[in-house]
Length: 366
Image 1 (cartoon, rainbow, N blue to C red):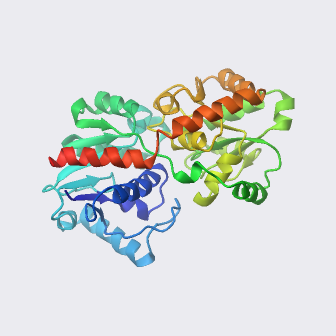
Image 2: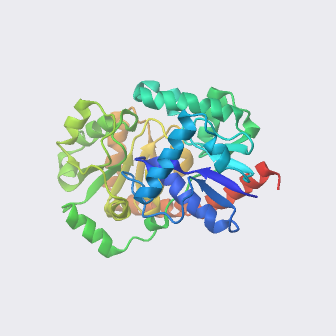
Image 3: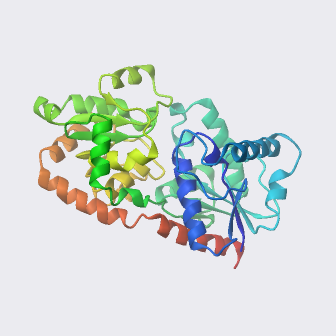
């Protein structure tokens, strides 16, 4: 069996999809026989993961993106040529004309552009509408959660037997963060007091305004003891939201090597998103042994299990009360942290890669 995976998102600025592909491809390469997993464009060992630039060198990046442009906007069948000899081509929404000779698969990361179109720029909506047509003709599809699978079946009309739910994973870096790395991150970002942490792109779906309201509604004594720290690139948030962030400890985009120690340094992690296909930040916080407050909708209860306090993300009062409950109880924080670590051990990239290989074997008929 030979599988070619579209890796072009690794060459551009990207967030969750890039995290998925980076760790997923590496996991598949470790789990599969040599030569089983190839990429389009051809990439060898990846550089360190960073979301704001390519994981490949300059010339490899330029040639790879050039090949993508030619494949998408000319009649040259570059994807077909690249995939020759492959049993399966696993595509992303960046490839407009995936090859037809190989069996076609893809990963659905979320359905938010269909369920919450008002929260996305027009470019995102166009890309996902085009991707939907590819999903409909794919031989089989991976969904990163059961929640995402249900939404894809319901909204896109995909046959349930065509979609397999395979949870994404958590990098090993989050499970055992050295104390010296945590101390260095605290010093680098001047995090002198205990803090509540949010990590994510600042966009409407992440519900940052409700989080800011809930934190402001906490008792003054709690706000004096615990800072609110927010990290993540400024996406397409409303200007009013960006303005409010300047009144808090907003760190902006955090480089990947700092993300695990920053997460592990937090007293509490909060993620009141209105929709997630998987929810990497929640899984990462659990792996780091940080108690979590998150939403009771979409995939988040599925990913968190019994290891988080779940709230209605549109209720400022519920979110405030959950924050207060954990901040006031060190014992409850320790209990939830232990549950989180146990749950995160079920969400590793090794497990994801093993299940994905069985998925590909089934599709290839081997």
